[in-house]
Each structure stands twice: as C-alpha cells, then as structure tokens.
Length: 80
View 1 (cartoon, rainbow, N blue to C red):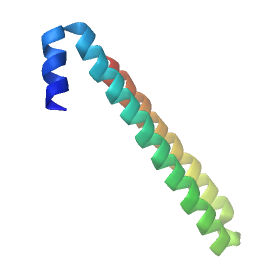
View 2 (cartoon, rainbow, N blue to C red):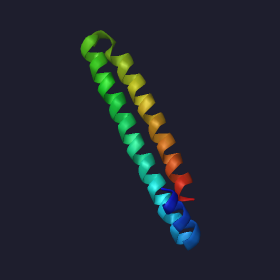
View 3 (cartoon, one colour):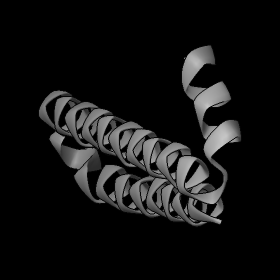
C-alpha cells in the first residue's frame, strides 16, 4: 500500500486517480456489505416477530437509504 501511494505521488494526477478508484471501490463494497447485513437482520427479526414486520421494514428501508447516501458521498469524495 505504501509503495502504491509513493507511486501515485510520483506519477501525479494519473496515480491519484488510481487511488481514487480504489477508494470508491472500497466504499461501494462496504456499502454492499452494510446493506446486506441490514437486510439479513431485518429478515431474522421479521421471522422472530411477524407482528412487528411493518416497523422492522420501515426501519430497514431508512437505514439502507442512509448507508447508501454515505456510500455515495464517499465515492464522490474519493473521486475528487
């Protein structure tokens, strides 16, 4: 990783765009894992308490939207 940073600093803008692409990719992967965890836990919760499914679904959708918003922000920052 340190070698990559040094290479990016030496090669200028092109090297920095490589790091931006890596950062954007990590942000997207992290968001995918987070949303997957939210969905999985929501399904488990609904399976345990079916009467609370509407509350669980609402909270799941809000949490997934927040994670996706943060991921979009991270991708934009990484590519700047």
